Amino acid sequence: MYVGRFIVVGPGVGAYRVSSRSFPNRRIVEREGTLTVTPTPDAPETDNPYIAYNCVRESDERAVIGNGSHVDPVTEKLDTGYPARDALATALLALDYEKDDYDTPRIAGVIEDDAATVGIVRRDALLVEEVAEPTLVATYEEDRPRAFDFAATDASAAAREAYDLDFEHAVCAAGVAVDDGVTTGIVNGD
Image (tube, rainbow, N blue to C red; front, side):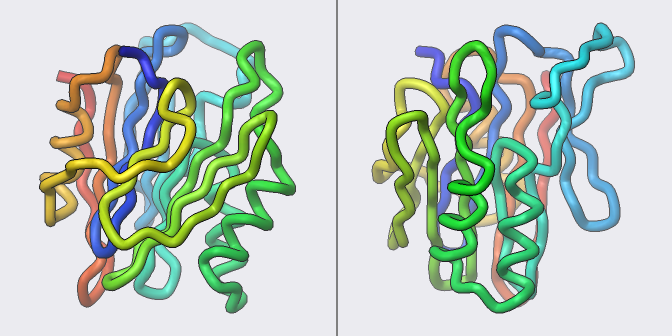
């Protein structure tokens, strides 16, 4: 099944995976503590504004993950003292779903050592929920947060598990763990 880009968010651990039929020539790179989705050197040129963005950022021993440019304003809201729910709702509502051919939803999560919050804005809804167990939400098909069996407990294992999940068109994945600081892991295409 093709679910597009997705996140798994739970207390202490999370992951983000790029799955793409249209733009598979992407990778995740680490730049000064931020994980960024970028085109590979051999990717065809495009003016599509949705293929390069920060997908993981740290905010005061928390991590923000997501599928687009909304990751930055969520992080900025957290840095100014907003609770996770409000930071997600404000940024997702302000930026709304992507205005592409598919009305692609924006998905994001905030991961803390003992708490997690997940959000999605679709053409027809804004959903933001605090979650107590790993929870999946994706841009297509799985576009409503639901509890999800996810065993990883560290960042590298989270990236690998997300990449290896049985959803079609895996491109790259990022993992994050929050426990006395934020650690990240990356898996770029096999």
